[in-house]
Image (cartoon, rainbow, N blue to C red; front, side, top):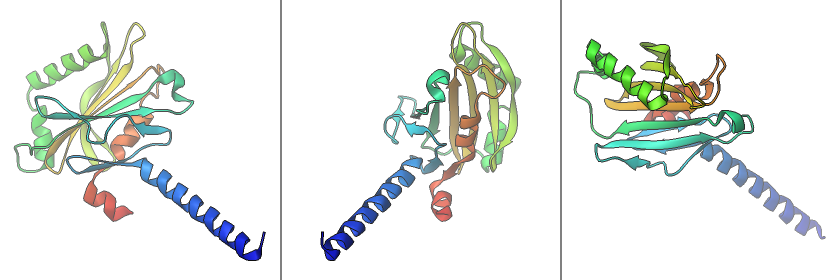
Amino acid sequence: MSRRGAIHLAALCAALAVSGLTKTASAETVVMPPGLSVVLPEGWALDGSPEGVVSKSGLRRVQFACESDACEETQETCTILTRDEQMEGDDDAGKLREMYASPLKRYSRLRAVLRATSPDAEIRKPLERVRIGDRDWYRVETDARYNYKSGLYAETVIDGRYVGVICKSCETGEERHASGLQIMQRMQPNAKAAARH
């Protein structure tokens, strides 16, 4: 091979390597309506379209799944729920506060997450407002029975819009939803995500 051919081949290999790196980096960040961005943990991938599926009630569901070797047993999945319309209220903190201002709302939420987990499920971590990443969330964890998946259920308000996260796992140890918490921590409005990169 001539010197010129070797240089051309080296340049081609370098270009392919760079394009491969770019592809991998872009695959880690998922942009979803209505203006959210999330950097997925290692081993996680989008399951379906970033547009998700919108129900008749206007709730959009975008699915993610863990595909690493470690997740073969835990079968971890996470779903991000959003609404396009703005919530009523003054600011994000006020809107979040109103979500569970009454005991009836809290009771209804606990019943709903237990039903969504399994028959005879129990509350593992109570419904409470906690700081995850740079925002507050209402979070509750359930403990499943009879080989169902346990769940992490969390809700917040980002730029005036409702955002929910549901993560499920077959893990039974103390640390069950580390990846789900990472997804919540890395969720940002698109403008903030773009400013970082």
